[in-house]
Image 1 (cartoon, one colour):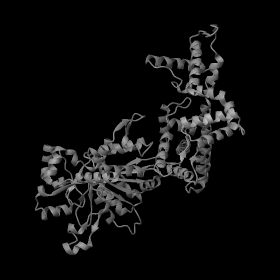
Image 2 (cartoon, one colour):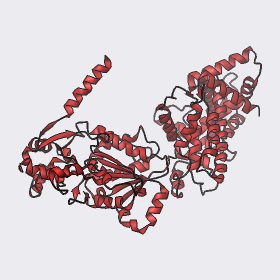
Image 3 (cartoon, rainbow, N blue to C red):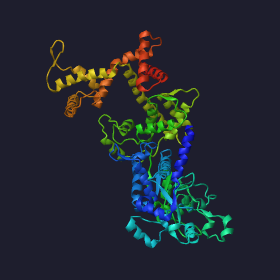
Image 4 (cartoon, rainbow, N blue to C red):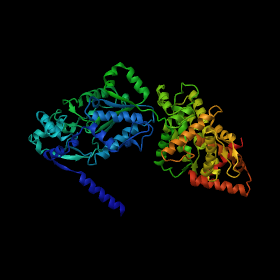
Length: 631
């Protein structure tokens, strides 16, 4: 019964969307809401902005429209939105083809698909409503009916900008069917839809010998020539080419640079003059956004050919590289797994992270500055602070690169290999080690990986494995610590008491004997050495801690063990180091006693309850860490 109710509601909604009236009714609507008559670029820009804009981590605007599908491509997305922003103001860039260029699997097609689907949904809202002349094969704006001589007056009096001319079919209908009476021409609301070929078109190049230009611009309908008497009669023409269909909206030209020259020449006229040239008629006005995508090698060959200079000058190029941030790469795989039927298989914590780390390493250029490894660069790009490096160093690292993100392993390869593990019969969970093994095993069947790259990628697998080993040990050791935060807080307070006494050159008082004691240098160094603080650097580090305490106190905030990232790391490492032997004995025992079993079960329970493991994946983690500690 619930589905029947939903179907009824859907039919009611469809009826509400099916507005019809005369040109006079439409003009009254436009005079109250001039935005109804905006051009295609303006409609897409408003669609993007309707989803909301925030300030991103880098201080640049972040557009929410792309959030659910595109990750880690803030810069290309900003360039795309800037293009639509300028085009929406009717600046010259709207007469350019938007070309997205980047490696396979980088998100180009997804960006275009998002815009197309978004445009379809937006046209069904009040803000995105689109109206056309009824029975116009190109669904053109009814304002094209207004004679050229009256348009400037309407813009002055009503603020309505009119651009474009009637298509040949509507021109014939106006004279012969409506006797030139513009106000009587029927108008209807349309919903843009690629499936129904209204306002959204897609063109895919194929064999130039067999592909007909009519797929782009339409052609003569031979069956009607006998009725109308002439091939030049607009009623004998099928306005069903992809450029005709995409009028008022958007056309995707898939792999445009693979198309034959005759198809590209049509785009020259469309982009510069916003007209479609057909054999039997004069120029036909078209208001549409043309978006294409291609790979780097195709684009390089296109640019090298001087015959393409005219078309190249009519393009806005946006490079769409691979994502270079691990946290964003994880979101890509979470999305893809969430869309599959395999989402019931448990993905152990850090599995997607280690796969993402490997993928990002393959896309990075080696830093020129000595002492910075690719792994350090990866962490910096993901927002972490690494030793002496800070986030301000990221810009410098990015500026020295040439093609970073334009090469390497694609998300498709990674998700394919993970899917192979998830889809195995009887699989209930996948671990980070499973993921790394699957990535390595897939190199032999990856046709584009040569021997040199294979060796390099295997080294990256090894580097990521080392990183995961540390993560795994820390995960288990943390689970072994009973009331971890209380232990860390106690250690912190002890450390801070000694640091304060050291910096202020005073003595500590024993809480029991009230004896005056020198600051415990051994305790302080045992913590500071965990993060490589040297003897020479200890004084400045301790003073830095006191400054942070003072700064927080002025704002009425308490200093917690998490308040200073490096001190937090040092405290954790100190606690873990003290526990290492206990963990080693408990996890590696082949015949654990009752006390060891109790500890194991308690750790597994904590991993399940607090870290997101299942009992099986937690057991696998403990076995793995046990083997690491016994090496």
